[in-house]
Length: 325
Image (cartoon, rainbow, N blue to C red; front, side, top):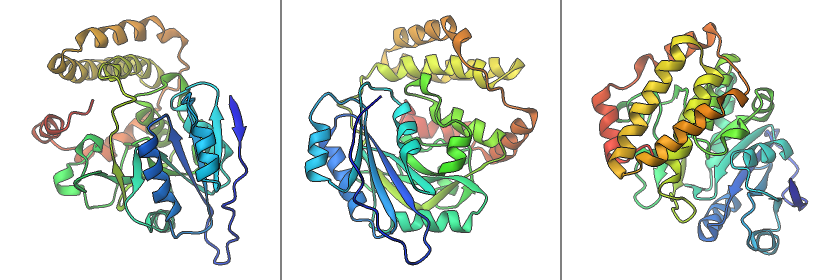
């Protein structure tokens, strides 16, 4: 799937014993946002590190542009848009002990964010993943669209805690652990892959932490997003995930909850047809999905982690202010 690979020039010898960190940027068009993201990576003070840009078949001059303007980057130019599979490609090719995965509309908030990532893994030796505090690009305030953690943002936005939510484009992993659980499930393409990955990591005994001292800003670019697309993929993937990760009554509760939440927002925006298309295609192709049923021990861990979940009034307030979809 890789059309061309440039050799990294960001191989800086480590004299302080610091772990090597790879930054994987998933790109699909959005040139202006990509430049801002790469400039924020370029200014990072932490060493040793490398920059990998995975271009998800932008069908433009992105590889040539990157070669000319960011020679320190190793570019993986894919021959098809494989969605979340692009992140897997980047992590597989990375050389770091830790791998940061960000999207091209997410940038580091300061020059010391990679230092904070290294410190987070240092003080959390059992953590397989850490997720960042996502700020609104213009205001610098908490981006509620990216808050799906099992705690109230009102009380916990500035506190570190164990979580079960992975914002796919604003997190970091121990590379070995990410690969051990198989990374993102590529048939999802887009939508829900973070939740599926989190479930498999928790079921494998891994820990994921929300680290509010690591800041990124989300520009939430819309030019490559259809207003209708999320309603289809989130519902289709919800069905697939229900049969992939869940069993028995949990499967149907998960489906019912997803239908209720996605149905509310699709009705609110006039996208019910897209939701029902996703529902139909999800059930039609569910038999092709590889099963990775979560164990009883995994569900017990999830129950403990979500014991402090915010009540429905707070959750509805969050979604009403900045809808999850």
